[in-house]
Image (cartoon, rainbow, N blue to C red; front, side, top):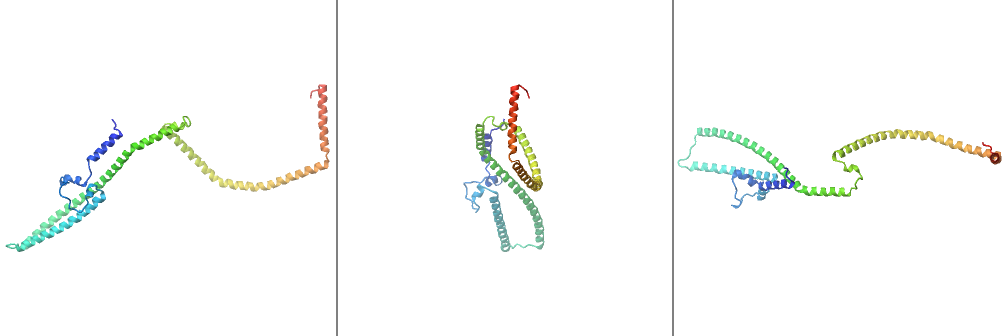
Length: 280
């Protein structure tokens, strides 16, 4: 059975609360449980670094302790060497070291140095591996924290989206646009079809835009050819009007009299045909 959102979130928060990430808590399996109520810390490193560790603070803390232990080692070797030298001098009888013993000590020291160097190399590789794994775990932990925050905010966002969907459904008039009620698959298919149509229109528009300069030049050429013809037409029209005016002046009104007489004869003819019953 699938878990609900609240159950998953509660389980995640419980797991985070039961596994506190602290440098002191993480070191307990190695160094043993530390008593928080015991003696106060004498280190100058802030306790906040241990309570709220970050990669930068841990790296600074590690550099600090490396420098501190380096100084402590040098001081320890210096004090031990002085103590052995003084005891060898003031001892009774004094400690006398032969040359052969020094040779044997140097040989054993070389072997010990080689073994120590090998161990240092192994420890350095192990530290590098641990650092890489620690950084990876830190990134994963930050990602989990971010996802947990998003999961906590998700119900509120889902509720707001559902409210918006209900408001849009209520505002939409039934049957006003059937495409708004299509299922997802048909909607995607319709979107793809509209995209193809738009691409085809864009292609045709590009072709027409390429043809515009040529058509513009052709239009300019036709306008240039049309202008003389227009001038010629205007001249011919003016000449025809002038010829008509001169003809009417030459007839002296005879044309109007002939037209009236023609209408009278047509009227007489139609009257006689009506009285005699003659069909046209």
